[in-house]
Length: 382
Image 1 (cartoon, rainbow, N blue to C red):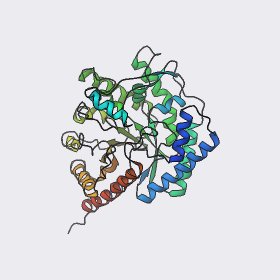
Image 2: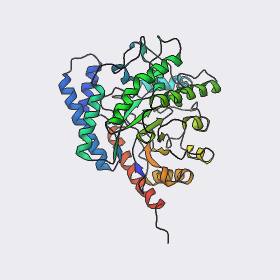
Image 3: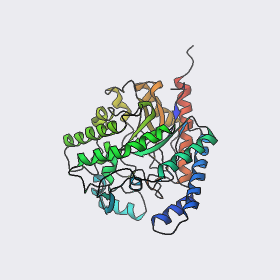
Image 4: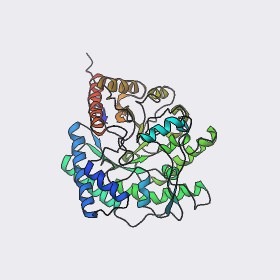
C-alpha cells in the first residue's frame, strides 16, 4: 500500500443520459444502431475514467456502463438462460408492504431476486461483450493514467440468487457449473492488466432475500459453499489481483433483517480476494468497524469499508468520512486500509439510488475525507 489512504468505489456509476436512453430503448425491444451504441459506451467509459481521475479516485472502474446490472448481465455471456422468474422479495420490505408499494410508486430500488432462469447447461457464449469492456477500459486508462483499474464480475453465488435454477439436479451442482463458466471471464480481466472485482452480495443480502425462511445455521452453510465456489473459480488468479464486494442490498429499506456482519465475517474472510469491500457508512452497518476488535483481518487482506453511503442524497461530510476511516485504522491498521463506497451508484441501469450529480459530490467528499485521514494517520512524530 502507498503511504496514504487510497480511494476507490464499488463500481457502478451514473450513466450519461444519451447512453442510458439507448440502453433502455434496446432493453425494451426498440431498434438501436449497434455501432452507435458501442461508440457511445466507449466514449462514455473514457469520460467517466477521466472524471474519476480528476476527482482523485485512485482505483477506477468503467462504471459498469455496458451492463444492465451487476448480476443479470451474465445471461448475455453464458448459455443456458431463458424464461423469467418474479423471484423473492426482501423480507424487510415484506414486513412493511405499504412502504414497499410506496417505493415502487416513486421509482425507488426495490430488490427482488428474479430474472431469467437457468434452463440448460451453463457455459461461456461466443460473444464480444467482455472483449469490448476490456478494450474500452484499456483506452480510457491509457488516456487518463489512474493508479489502478478494475472490472466488476458477478460471483457464482449471486448468479444463483438472481437466475433461479430449473435445470441442474440441485443448487450445489448449479453453483459449480456457474463457477466454471465464469472462470474464463475472471481470468481474462486479470490477463488484460486489470483487477477483477467479484460482486458477492449473496454472502449477506441473500439471507433476507432468497433464504429468508432458512435457519441461520443452514444459511451459513450456503455462505461456506459459495465462498468455496468463488475460491475454486479464481484458483488461477493471484489474490492481490482480486477484490470482493459484500453487501446487504443497495436500497433504502429498514434492513432490520440483515444478518450481522459479526456472524458471517469469519467465513467471508476465507475468500481468496485480497481487497474486501464492505458496507460501513449507512445507519445499519456504520458500527461494523467494531467487529474487527474480535475478528482478526487476515494479514494478506486489505479492508475497503464504505465511508460514503450509496442510498442517501445526504453528502457525507469529509470530516465524517475521515472519522470513519480512523475507526477502521484503529482496529486493522492504516497500512491495510483503503476508502470506498457502501455500494454502487447505479446498481441497475436507469434506477440510481442517488441523484447523479450528488453521487459525484459524495465521491468528492470521499477523496477529501481520505486526505484528512491520511494527514492524521501519517503525521510526523515529534
